[in-house]
Length: 181
Image (cartoon, rainbow, N blue to C red):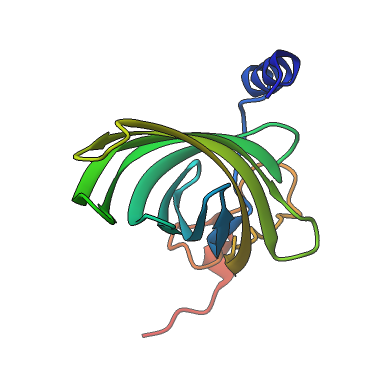
């Protein structure tokens, strides 16, 4: 990435940090890196947080990663950036089992009108019991939205919350109601 692109991304990230970030609850798809292929599943936990699981296969290894990610809107609710951290465990062909910690920084776009998420990220990792102690990967993911975000009903009452009819609060008009025994 050039310095100019990185500066533009960081500038946009710091300027736009309010509101709800994701337009989905659960999404699954594929993650492509230069030397690995992976499957990804992302689940919304709360307004700005998701947990993502990634299973990857490479020519010499396979691994599973779990990441907690914070999402922040950039240009509306559909385009956001995210950052997170987590850990991984895997198996290297010649050395056996390895573990480590991961970080992630990326951008994500929910395609308007279609149930797809497009994302690109940088994911540094520090390995324990691996030939390469540090690995910096970048990937592109395409996910299908399995569960959409529930839409909130828009209130037509413009002056705050309107009282619910099921409330048991007494009203001045209760004197005209027929009482049941």
